[in-house]
Amino acid sequence: MFVRQCRKMLLILINSAYTSFFRRIYLSLQPIMMNIVYIVFGIVMVLWGAGKLTDGATSVASRMNIPPIIIGLTVVAMGTSMPEFFVSFVSAMKGTGNLAAGNVVGSNIFNSMLIVGITALVVPMAISKSTVKKDIPFTVLASALLVLMGIDGNISRLDAAMLFAVFIAFMAYTVQSARKGGNNGDAENMKEIPMWRATAFILLGLACLIVGSNIFVDGATKVASLLGMSEAVIGLTIVAGGTSLPELATSVVAARKGQCAIAMGNVIGSNVFNILMIIGITGVINPMEIQGISWLDLTVMLLSMVILWLFSFTKYTVARWEGGLIVAMFAGYMSWLVMHAV
Image (cartoon, rainbow, N blue to C red):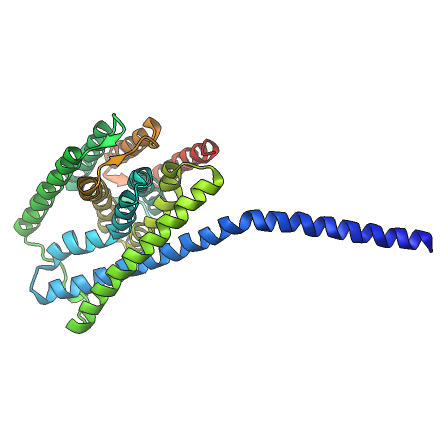
């Protein structure tokens, strides 16, 4: 009888200890889990809003008889960069410049390493001579400009204005070249929706981008604080990965359909938009301090484009083994980043 009571009390104590242990774990993780939910919800809102904004703006532009190639180079290209833009803009306005800069640098690394690597693993990417000789070098130049301007750990209004001026010149040159080329694309692929619905899509898309970006930035900032990680590291990893989802989906789907030019153009265009437009506009409105972005991060961003450029010269194709190597390099960088995050 005595032994039975002792065993019963021991079981009660063990059960109580386990309950207390798991309760402490639950209570300690609850704030993090809630903010992760906010991050995911913010990502969904931003991505959905960017899609609706692009659909609405494309339809309106088409009704205004703007050539499809110009719509693709402006409205659609900007649409895939809207998640990065709104997240970076909101971050800078809230005084978290490291998160904003980390988002841009991280997104470019995701684009040129992970997205190109995965896409090349799915289908070897054929690249045109024009892309190798003009577009990729310009992206390398834009990356080098950001590295030089970030030497002092700040992006001033003058720096940002110079970046945005280069962006305007790039867009003018691109549109002019497209007009001269006479390739207006396939107008039948443009979405034709009623004007009232297109307007509603634009307004709804903008609302989701603004609200989703605020939720996303707040959640990411709190997770960084709770885990003891810097805002820059969160921007380089979670935020950059989340905002790069449109480019990943677009590039992989395009490559599987045999449209490698679209896949590569999407990556290059997004990288140029991220540096010149996003940093340009955001920095002009609110100068950014980027002390949290290390020389390694900026070097990886620049070298990733240089490596892509070098691989593109091999028969004007990024082969599967080259894609696998790029993905392995990306995994190594991310591993180092996470290991040194706390």
